[in-house]
Length: 162
Image (cartoon, rainbow, N blue to C red; front, side, top):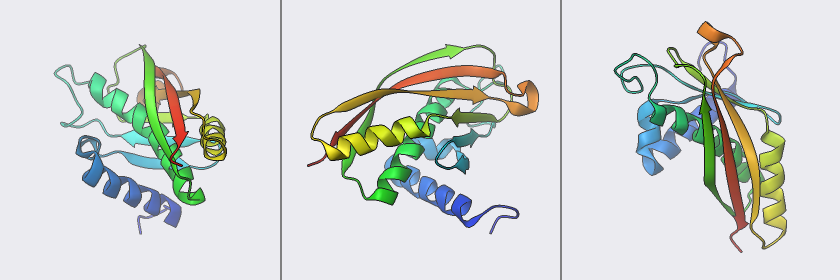
């Protein structure tokens, strides 16, 4: 086990790695790490390294967007797996606002876990498509503290597989 990390942390990261390597290798290539996942918050980190860095020594726009999208996906798929829900989830649209260059490891923070859970539970209970907005902040805490380098808003669309 990784020093100072819980078994949940280890399992969350193992699930993420297996899923991404087999289903979405582009995400796996960036090496995301789930730092925190609970009923209130999800934090996913993408390290700034050769794979995610552009020619200006900051994180690629594509890597930033992938990290934000993956954060919402981790929240959704964790709930789906725990509850055994039969729903399909797509991120139908998104907007992004970039404030500064990300010149360090980026932490993607989603404080709207309850919103995602509510959408999933609502879609599982009905046969209707359910949509809602979910926000993710991108932070570089080593350099900017809680001041975000980018803000993302996703339109999450969920439907029962019945």
